[in-house]
Length: 93
View 1 (cartoon, rainbow, N blue to C red):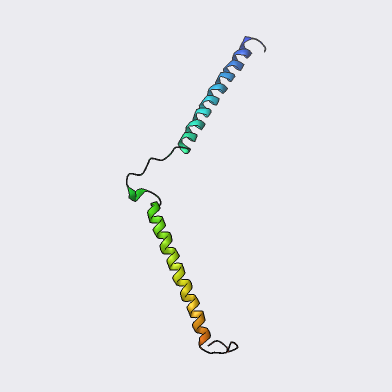
View 2 (cartoon, helix red, strand yellow; view 1 turned 45 degrees about the vertical axis):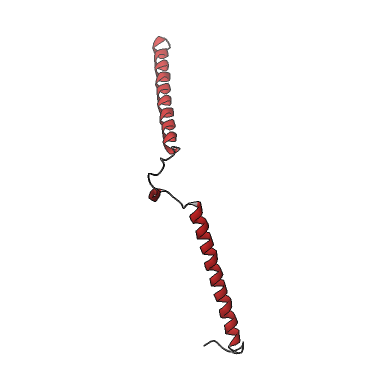
């Protein structure tokens, strides 16, 4: 069954494969464009992520101050516990 009919079928199959491959490549490119699309900027500050640099500095300073106060209180309570005069071998109450 070699002849012109066989060549037409092969040519048709190749054209079909080419169309399918082209369609798949277009779909892949479109999907990648959708995945890598940069989002639009937020309309207002309520919809934006994060805080401003000045606010971040204030938050960091307040956090450090709170940490220092807690450390000082913890140290003070250790010193006061030692001043009670309870022997170190006394069982806890």
